[in-house]
Length: 121
Image 1 (cartoon, helix red, strand yellow):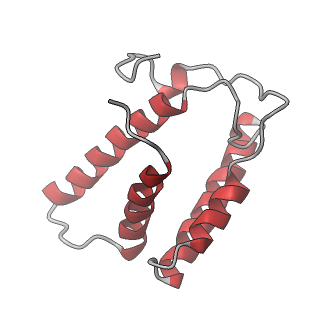
Image 2 (tube, helix red, strand yellow):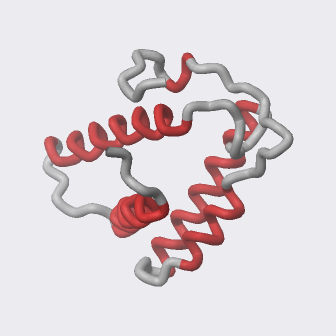
């Protein structure tokens, strides 16, 4: 599926996980906890936020985000990043000049996580 797909995240089905699936939250929290370049306060807010979003996923979808779930993760990520860019620019247009520490830290984590992948040419 192309990132240019017109289907929104909400329109895509939520298939059931395969036998190889595992929850994402635990390993993600462990990875974040291992990053020393983030303040303990921001790290705590990010980890608490991730756990809260995971609980919400359990309540809304009956499951947490898991690997091998049949969902197009790159498409989901692309759409969420586009939304994030719009929220950031909205804050700029509204005159906000300071980025909260936890948001700057989350953006830092996002850029750090790209090091886990090789780039597609």
